Length: 252
Image 1 (cartoon, rainbow, N blue to C red):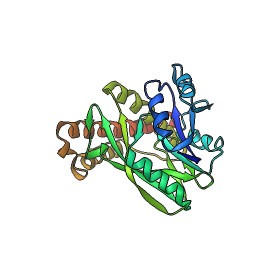
Image 2: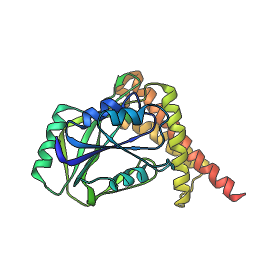
Image 3: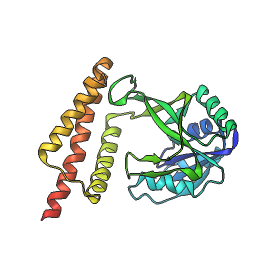
Image 4: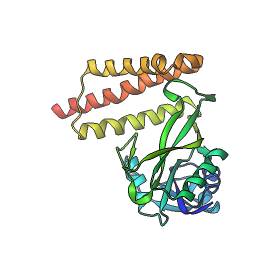
């Protein structure tokens, strides 16, 4: 456990995950900071009972704003971001400890394995991916309202071990999140001046499916790979159609 590291977790109604993620985070950090956006379940109480500090920021459809807000409430020199449904394995916990001991000015990436709909994906859109998560607090900020990304100029190093990401228990959960995320994406990109056409909507969607199913070997995951590639087609179509709707409304 490192006294110079804070683990940040964003939450909204995560009572089923919060105790486990806080205990997992405490394996590497003395400080666990929860940025809650208005939970109506037991998330806040369970977080505090498990030793986390909870701060509140009203949800305004901006994931980067939540992550940047966390930076204002950290007293340590380092920050590691976890999602509520993510867990670090033991090898990664050891790697984080070693990285903190070196005190090198770097940003650190982590491999993430995705479990969705009861399946451990190895290919396609849910294949294991590399995510940047560990930074000096004063060297990073986040951009984009959804599918947010960190901006940090420090050299990058990949840590050993991995994060296990237990996402999407059900199709309804995916559908609800997809609807929410695509709306945020469309509104954000429309405000930034991005425009599209119906032909472009379809082209992006088809390419997204082919990239996931063929180029990223989604077919190797069997039926689950086909389902996830079709999901990506639908997701891509939704976000571009919503952007197109905003254009039409503006033109009127």
